[in-house]
Length: 369
Image 1 (cartoon, rainbow, N blue to C red):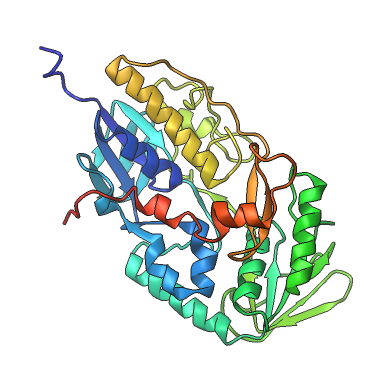
Image 2: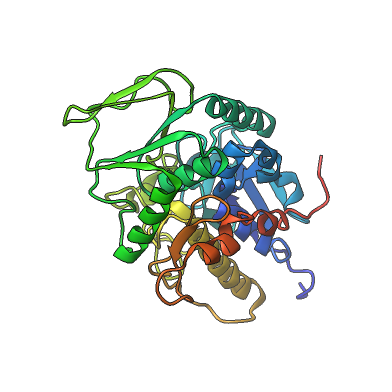
């Protein structure tokens, strides 16, 4: 068999989130790629909060998988069981690719992420959620991590007249290995926006009404303070999507449920099975980290397939975060900026356009029916 007639290796990518779609796209020209995801479109959830407050963004953040790959195929399905490189999909279809990439990501409460698999249904749900928020005067946000901070900034930027209260059991905003100067800057901006912070306030229970739904909201802290609102949002609760893993793959998960990987992002004990993105223990759960991992795996597999280039090792990015507070506010810690990145930098990098054009450009293949 000549070099030109040698069959292309097969690559299956489970999950079409930030890591999955990126690695599938990057290998489309050198491998027979199969991308598996239960949804018909990629949700650019970095901009979900913006779509909540400005519904004209909704259609822009749903990008159809049918426009992702020029050569490979998209299978709308979900993994039911995976052991080694043997994949059984919910439909009963079986795959055993030469290389398997696990990129099934994580769930998060709506509207930061959506559990709807039909993009038209998901978009309608976003528009309904906007109307629910629009009619509310008092808003309660539970959780002062990046998600809660961003949502507070989006609401106050679009609806400055609304009363926004952000509650968290921790003593400060933004838990993690961040400089205190970043927290101080974000708190100063939140105060200027008029966001009320209630920190060190553990709730006895979450409000009885469903989140993102208008209605009488009431919650009581362990100190006896009653918090009332017209709508509330749950801004915490990442759920890793790894229940389909069996055998050695299931055993590769650590105590927190993340899949252990080596320097090349191969699942511990596996030669041709990789885990990237939120489910991997390689780095923090952020879209940017997922993209970096996808790029490394794609480059290494391209080297194995073509014989050109060198195998490289993943290096965690370290402390890095950009927290927009609406289109013009926010702060962050970025390795190429000394000290704290302020509102102008974060707005230009992320807050104003929310990276929509950068991601939509990836979905440039002719529409497939």
